[in-house]
Length: 520
Image (tube, rainbow, N blue to C red):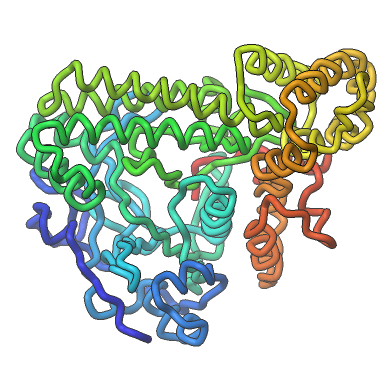
């Protein structure tokens, strides 16, 4: 394989754990621990992102080579790799959890690509680290397929996200109790190589702050600005405040994207929010099928529903407040409050922009917000598929004073209930059509605006589970086809209509198709 150009700034510029012995431990005064991936029995490439491979400079022949599977299955280190696990803490489900760290993720190093972009390569499922607690550091095929597919699906949806380079089968079995019911089973193991400019999270700052280690906190913040926010390098004494404001703004933009496409993260702990505003750590995520702001895909959160779809913007604000508290020894309270206000202002603007685009309008006024709120109430009350409805809304003939709702019928999970509620929908459509006519956008412009905001294809849980079922039987065609479909989520793809269909009845309660556990 061609030589990757590594510039491992994180391990070069920041203090590491002096203890290199194996075993779980509390690590103080350090931001990472050196640890090598644990070799696996038979690494085999199962899937890869052609775009990400090309960005890193790999040819298709190199990707297909045994050396590639060996390197990204954890069996060999390429020249320049300096593997480590990061040390961080976090608030989990609202409670401080102390030290967490990369328990099954091992960063291989930072590659500087030919275009100058920096990419950190990280293996998920590559074996135990000092932060694995009681776990084995491994990942199973099903969760690895979900992470691999969703990373790429989100990118092509235009949602800021970590990427996925490769999915490698290990040839080893991993024991997991998927339902936490005392019935563990052996499952095939796999490793995802995920890629991002930075994997630094809110929790990286929270841990040294919780220990009163202000010097380490400052070292991390200075490094983060220098490497990940170089445009702030000349901001002088205002750099810290500007940095927090930008983190808040990026987080707000990310939340608006999640809400626009119907994505639910499922585990919005502070250690799972990126300082770059990327979607990170794909565990029990899901997409809204029938519109329900109270839905969460996480079985662990089924009682409280803290991380439900409709509360994600509020949770992100709460998480930013925890980050602000951690940074308070370095940043003035007023500047932190300004950053939090920036979050609110940015999210409100982004939400209005999303409303305008989803409805095909040039802009969004207060009356349009109210119009959308009324529609969402109708969708929730009548079990209507969010993705299908908004995509079909572009097909409504808004020239008519009383538009025919027929194009929207396919979005109903309960046709009888939807039919009974049709008068209210017709009234809404009449007001919507009048608003579109007032807006004055040409029909083709309106439809293009809507089709660019409302995806035809999203990675519904049941679609991912179907691909997983086939992969566990040795058939990877489902993974490859789903990856290809999700590369063009806003475009109609003739012959692939099945990927745009609503959730089938058999998937309503089936494990993996509705809610998921945090088990890997």
